[in-house]
Image (cartoon, rainbow, N blue to C red; front, side, top):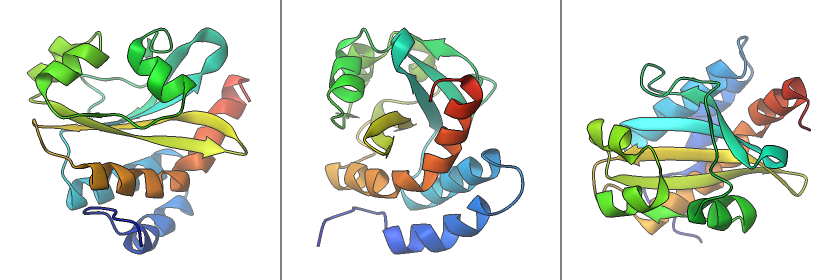
Length: 172
């Protein structure tokens, strides 16, 4: 059996599933997902980033901190080394320290100002396509490889929300 760290995919389905059927999608589902993750591993910031492949950008479609990281903002992450690994090669990435955050993100100063020094990502995929990335951040050394595997295991729960965004954006 895979090691999902502090995540339990069965519990995730039981806790997040009902929110995914409630009115107010995809926000209701994204918020329930964030709450589930915060209860399991903690986070200071969780964002949903849609992959806008034609533009080589990610677009934030949900944020646990919309004041600092508002939805609708775009970042040209496809052209970065992080983007090559995560977006183009579809490999997971974990930053354990502030130095890792500085390597990965051009907005690292804002990330650091929120007390974040670690980050894990999960891929949201559907029918062979990468729809986007879940980015979860907390203090340095907050996450393990197993936590990242667990986040990635429950990420498909959010595919409908990402699909709805892409359909509305004309990107998919």
